[in-house]
Length: 162
Image 1 (cartoon, one colour):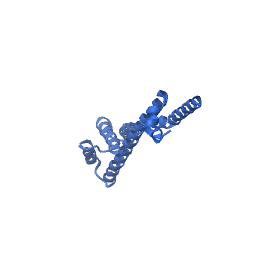
Image 2 (cartoon, helix red, strand yellow):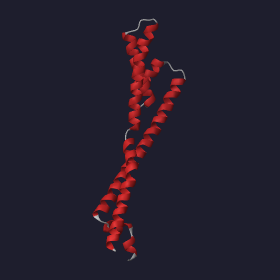
Image 3 (tube, helix red, strand yellow):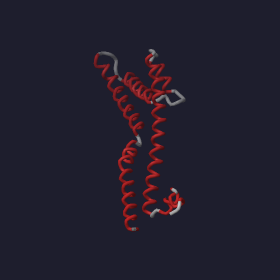
């Protein structure tokens, strides 16, 4: 046995087809997982920055109609918090225009649809941020077993070679 037989490339090329398939599968799962991880990291960081910008404007006491116009006409993505605000404000304006004329019950007629719209927008934002997490969970759970299968297969082949 020489040093070239122990190189990673020669071990891969001399492995059985099943062992090569296991290695290829693990490599693909790893590459896809790292792609998702980095993409999620950038997405979450971007959402945090956009949320901080929006909250700063919101809590400075900006007039809500002006803030709504700014968010709805923004050329750059305003972020998840701004989209939730936009959905609520849009529904609030629509309900106020169509319904309430005054009184205690009128506020519920206006606020209930706005609250529902904001909950729906919140759920959409959460779904977008959580997308691909099921793949990461599955890959993290299954990969050790795939690797173990490859190890057992290799040990069985080694015993057969004795």
